[in-house]
Length: 371
Ligand SMILES: Nc1ncnc2c1ncn2[C@@H]1O[C@H](COP(=O)(O)OP(=O)(O)O)[C@@H](O)[C@H]1O
Ligand SMILES: [Mg+2]
Image 1 (cartoon, rainbow, N blue to C red):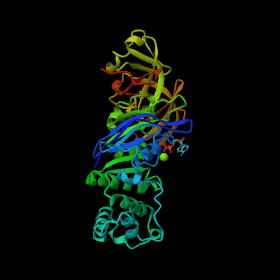
Image 2 (cartoon, rainbow, N blue to C red):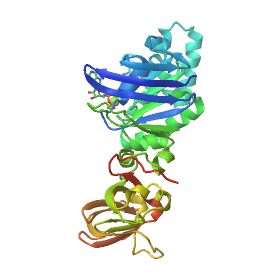
Image 3 (cartoon, rainbow, N blue to C red):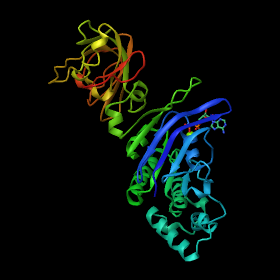
Image 4 (cartoon, helix red, strand yellow):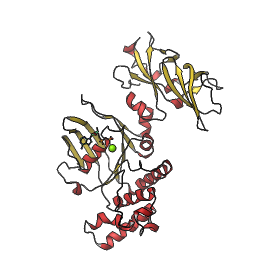
């Protein structure tokens, strides 16, 4: 097993930069998720680690060895793709064993590895079937089996669950998490799904597209809760969490203790008082998660934060209600546990704890420092 290091990696296709200054260390045994919107360069990053693409600049190390000039087959990585392309004329057993046979492993060793993988993946009863007689989830498990039997130093997964239906995705997600616990193989897992990122990753690296001005793609690296609790900028704040964090402009009072926007009144959270010292009277971006808002009519709430608006959409999912409200010039989303679904156009007063506010610089969108 091995850690991975990407050092100042650049990738251009022709003149178009796709990855800019990607600096990332993945520790041995770690499950690292690369997450970001479609087209931001996640697959490209994975293909660089696998050796299927060459970096335009920078170094890639696996297990402390620089692998820029090492052929893909000699990097000891196994990759699983979204389209798992099994050989239709081969049985499950033959599909799983194929990568080992072409490596000239002794037949007994192949047999025992296939049996072990089939056991781990619940495929033992299906070894003699052809892929066409398998469900989507079973096929994906065979694709995982092909990777597992190689016993590689590193697993690379590129959106392996996106072809599955919602129910199967949740089930396979749990299986992948269990598999990681059992095998502890260093893993880089690419997804555009922030729920997958949150549930699977030991750490998450959030990527955004680079631009013609070649901004670094990497926005933040951290554990799921670090990223959820303290997003490094407004992009991460909006990307992680569902529904996404509300982010709106507000003006600091002259004494910097209060924030105001049409329909919104709030104190500056204590932790941010230091950072707003130079910002008296200036605009900042305020972030507030939908799940941190409550209907202030609820008993027991004397909130220092007041938001007043009207209901534009209200959807219940049984356990909670998601309300889209117009507050001043902003559209805010609130998610709260209640059995009463508000009427469209109804006036609504929302409240939150002051500590739930996130502040970002209006100029750079970067999180303000906390003390
Ligand atoms: N071989 C290639 N030639 C030219 N452009 C490419 C190539 N591969 C990827 N790209 C471009 O690089 C960008 C990132 O692609 P990709 O890494 O597949 O994104 P993601 O996996 O995050 O959706 C996209 O704009 C894509 O069109
Ligand atoms: Mg991709």
